[in-house]
Length: 179
Image (cartoon, rainbow, N blue to C red; front, side, top):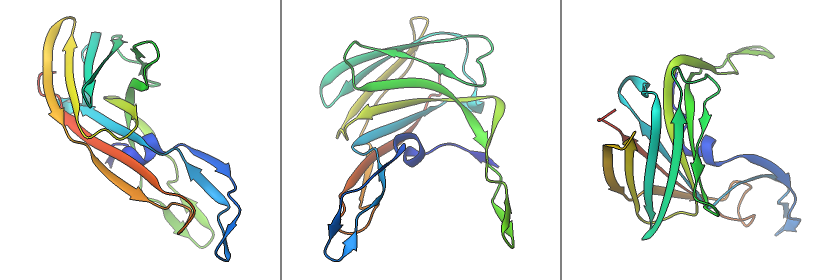
């Protein structure tokens, strides 16, 4: 089974913290990195040509830029991009993973890990904050691949229970047909 990481996995790195007791219940627990937007760029067949990619973004009207050099072949561990100095954006080429279903028999479970699919990648963009609009312009070696303005979807939850803090995450998936 092919699994593409969603915004929850990309944007919610786990950390522990305690916030005390509220209204008779404890807010101790796992806290998430919140107020982020994860955008996945998918190319046909999950393949990305080698070369220098430039991603020009407009985040609620503010221009940003990131670049990423993709070697041939890309390493299974992926490639980290570079964004403008002081930017609150990250760009990475990451492996698409196969995650078998978890099967439990009594107290033993199997299939609790994922394996990269060789040659299958996607670009992940993480924006600090939850913008209402994102302009995305992607080029490869100076040749235009795609241009799109999106309004990411968002969800707000209370991951540690009622009264323990709100967590808003944005997410979107964009196809890059020109790749």
